[in-house]
Image 1 (tube, one colour):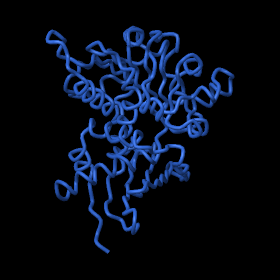
Image 2 (cartoon, rainbow, N blue to C red):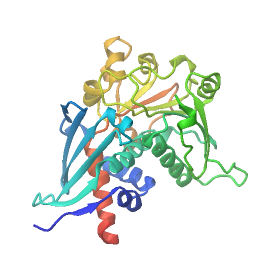
Image 3 (cartoon, rainbow, N blue to C red):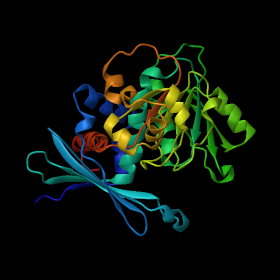
Length: 326
């Protein structure tokens, strides 16, 4: 057997841009990928945390991601999330590539979010954004948003240089590094501060990229037309946003059945009678159809699905084949 190509974190980041990842997700859905056909994620609890096993198959590719989630690693100076992705030939099932799983996840999660809300992003510039968290996913969402807004131009000649006006809300501002995101002005605010609340009240887009099991903000603090992206947890008991928001928003999910099984805010809103399961809007519908203007808030809830990893891993590998080994 020919040894599979190994693509480390640097290679994954170099080979596929955030914009290309968004386009890969969009193309997959428009080409007929059915998120509902994705096998259920398998979770194994260990002494140190969890192992997540995420297989997926498509006509032209097969793959599986093995991810470890070790909450105690933060105290050791190690990443909380680590893993590998094994991409297989669809005909022979021989491994053709092994990718860094954390880098792949950091690339594909914002790509999914931005693909899901791209049609409802404000036309004005800069877009006022509040991001809860300052980790890889928070930063990844900023880079992906900036790339897509730049691509979706043109902008008027007198438009501001900044595409994004960002407030990152964190528990410890002194420890947070401000990302050098092209096309964005970024400030760091303390969670719970008056400044953070004022920023939230003005935000057109809110990104929740934390591991919080409790709501990060009162739902009533949002603008009536806010777009909220919640991606921080796959735990069915985790609530980054209040169920009340799901009760009055247009709720977009990767797959309704998966959201009802794994998304804490969806489960809580349905359980409280605030949201009917039939009201959940599949992401594929949003991406593949021209939707009417939305009145009121939009909430995209993502739990992460294996089809997304397969799409982005395949795109990374295709670029590697075109450019030589990563």
